[in-house]
Length: 265
Image (cartoon, rainbow, N blue to C red; front, top):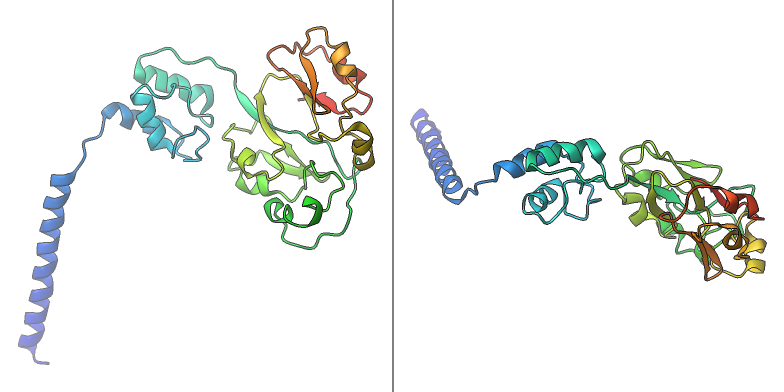
C-alpha cells in the first residue's frame, strides 16, 4: 500500500470517528434527562452500598422514593441515624426516630449442644447443603448449619461462625437484611438493637423430639409464659416467642427456662 492509500484510510477512519462523536453528543443532549437536585443530594448522602436492604433496587431508587415522599428519610438501614438526620435536613423535615434494628440468629445449637447425623463433604454453602438428606448433616433440621453463607453475603464483617453457629456482632450490623434473605433455614430475623432477651431456637417440634436433637432447644413447656410479668411471651407451635414491644428486660424468662433456650440479645 502506498502513502496516498494510507492517508486516505486514516482520513476516512478519522472522519467517521468525528461524525460518530458529533452524533453521540447531539443524541446525548437531545435525550438527556434532567435530575432533581434534591435527589442528587440524597444520593450523595447515602452510603452507596446498593444492598437492597431498604426494599428498593439500590440507593438511587431509594433517593427518588424519598424525594417523592414514598419512603421515609430513615429508609436506609445501612446509614443509620446519622444518614437519616442528613437526609432529613435536605428534605427539611424531622428525622424519624424509629429504633435501630439488627439481625439475630435464632439458634444455640453449638457443637456441644447438638451433633451431626453424618459427615458432610459437599460444598461449604448452606443453600447447597440444604438439599442433601435431612436438609443438612446437623441433627436439628431447624438449626444453623454453620457453613457461612450469611458470612459471605455480609458486606460489613458483622457475622462469623463460632462453634458451628453463626454469630452476629450487633455493633457492626447495619440491618441490610442480606443475611436474612440468604439463610435457607430462615433462622435469622431482625430485632430491635435495644432488645434484652431473645429465644435462641426455631425448632417447632414437640419437646421430646427437640431434646433428641439439641440440648438447648425450646421444648415449648410454657414456664417462661407463666413467669413473664408483662405477658410478653407466647408459645405457638411448641416454640416460645418474645414480643419485644412488651418485654422490659427483667430476665425472669431466661432464668426459668430449663433448656437455656432464652438468652441475652
